[in-house]
Image (cartoon, rainbow, N blue to C red; front, side):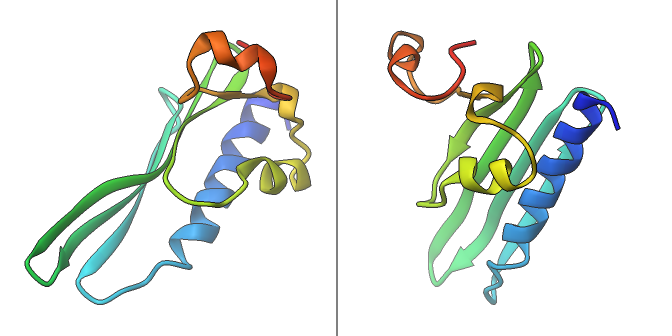
Length: 110
């Protein structure tokens, strides 16, 4: 399996794992994958009483030969899951960190 396909499969496996964890009545977990454009998203959509729920739990892109974590609204340490799948921190860009701050992490800068 080439690196790009490995990234795609790893992200899908990661999102599927967490999509199966969050199951609540009235709130749907949506796993959205676009392998053609390499966008991957886990959404929570529905109602909690009178409150509308609609937010991205996780959002990934694959671009410039790296996995970009665009959103992580959890306390899940994504890198640990991805490292178990053979993906190093240097292959991951934390896209929700300002570009000037990325050089101070263990992750890829770009």
